[in-house]
Image (cartoon, rainbow, N blue to C red; front, side, top):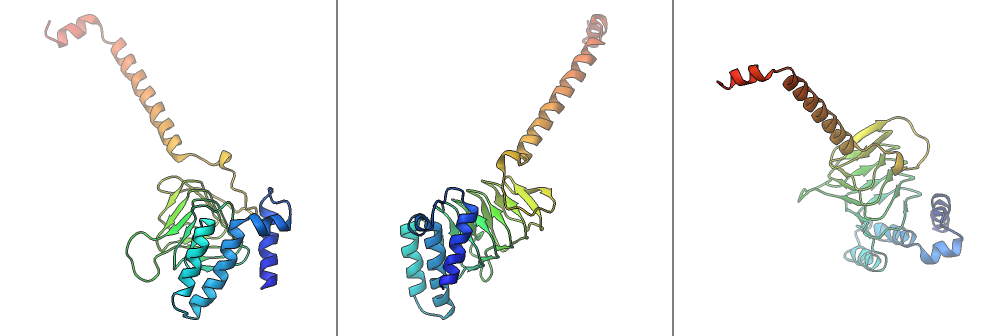
Length: 223
């Protein structure tokens, strides 16, 4: 148990440049509190202890703003940065070395039965406010941009942005950095493409109109 706590603290020290000391992390990091109490609730859930696992998760949600169903399976070195508003559903499976930010939802799409929440691979980064919904698999080394809504499976080594989420980049990456300033903007790219197309059409119309003499124009109107 103590080794698991130490591993979580080391993960925060590595991932969060704002972390100053072990004492600060222990006292002031709700993400740490939420995951450690989840480990306890999950063990009770697997042991089929009634009510108590859900009661513990409710208390943790009240104090941290992070809701993790005790049935969720979470790997090692999982880090929730800031954490307020995070929701993780019952059948969610999360691999090792996953980093998520505030407002992330790993949820379902309705009233499905059985496996209804996502499976997250290893070394995944999920930006703030992103929603990953349904029984889909997010591959290893995937990065999901802030505010994205992902409802389809994502292959390994991909970057996903947008609503709905679309793969905008696929390449191997060894770091866990999600640099939003360098992420492509598919909606913006489509709007820019439409703007250029409209400008081209306007130019063609002006060119066509300039080739029509006034007499030709008058004859076409019966003058």
